[in-house]
Amino acid sequence: MEQYDDIPILEDLIFSAEELEEVKEQTGEQLNRLSWFIDRTKEIKNTLKQTEYVEDLISKCKELEDSHRQLTAMEQEQRRIKQLITQARRLKEDLKKTEQVDDTLEIVYQSEQLNNSLLKMDDELTTLARLSTKAGTLTNRLEEINNEIDEIEEEFHELAPEACPLCGGEMKGSVEDEED
Image (tube, rainbow, N blue to C red; front, side, top):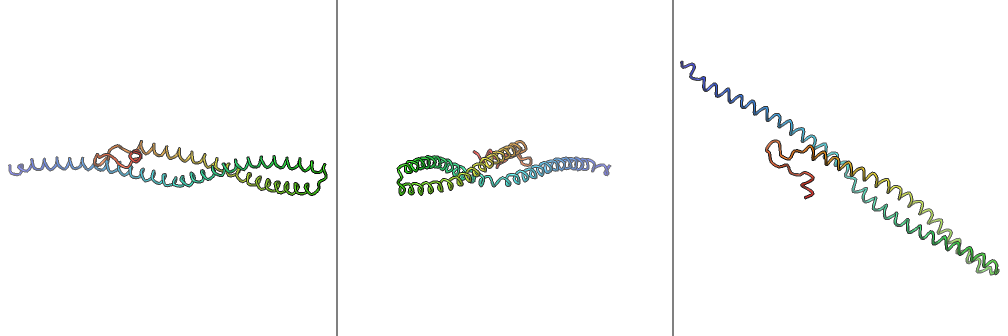
């Protein structure tokens, strides 16, 4: 009978070993889930790092908006100069009729200066028009990037658990926490 006295102890040890095996399996599953979550978080961080140049794009868009305002002002100035040139031409013709050669030469000189200014402004207008087109392109790209960021944030919120799978504590550092 002595040899059977150890049976209850052996049964307890077997039961403890079975419980430890079950805990080991659960811990392995939690470890796998946590590893997957960490890998996905790293992927999301890498994607967010790729969008760091957005601030530069915003700055360039503001510069282009300023250039566009300058372009508009220059266009108005160009119209005013065209009117002045038209007036100068009329005056030139009037002076020809009165045969006041000296005055006519002065008007021609001024007209040439206005014409040169107009040509220069026309070149600047062309440059600003190109910049305005680039601003539109950059604005569209910026909207695409913002949409990508929103999609990544939504995916992160869908994938991130509300509680830590190991300790059950509340997860911190989500985008919603940062906005509060």
